[in-house]
Image 1 (spheres, rainbow, N blue to C red):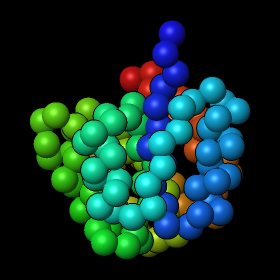
Image 2 (image 1 turned 90 degrees about the horizontal axis):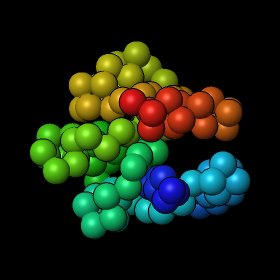
Image 3 (image 1 turned 120 degrees about the horizontal axis):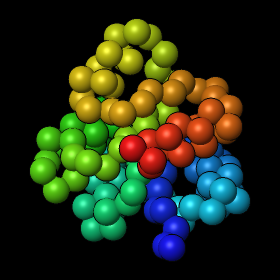
Image 4 (image 1 turned 180 degrees about the vertical axis):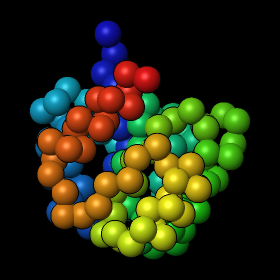
Length: 123
C-alpha cells in the first residue's frame, strides 16, 4: 500500500524539520512548503492526502490558501489541519469558516497532531 502523503506548510524551518522527522517515523511521505504560494502550487500539483498548514505565512496567508483549496471542486476533499500560534476564538472560527478540518494551536504536542492526522485520513 502506498504511503499517505502529507504537505507540511510553515515558514519556520525548525518546525518543518521536526514535523518531517515525526511524520516520516509514522510512515508518511512528507512534502514541504515554506510560504502560501508554494503551498498552493504544491497542493495543486502533488495532491497530498492531507495538509498541515500554518496561518501566518509569507506571500499568501494560511486562511486564503485553505479557502482557495476548499472552494475548488478538485481539492476540497483534502483534509486541512491549521497549526498556528493564533489562539483567539475569532481565529479558530475563521479557520473553520475557510474550510479547515481541524485547528491546533502552537505550542503543540506531536502526539496530538499525529492522532488528528490519523483520524482525518480514516474518514
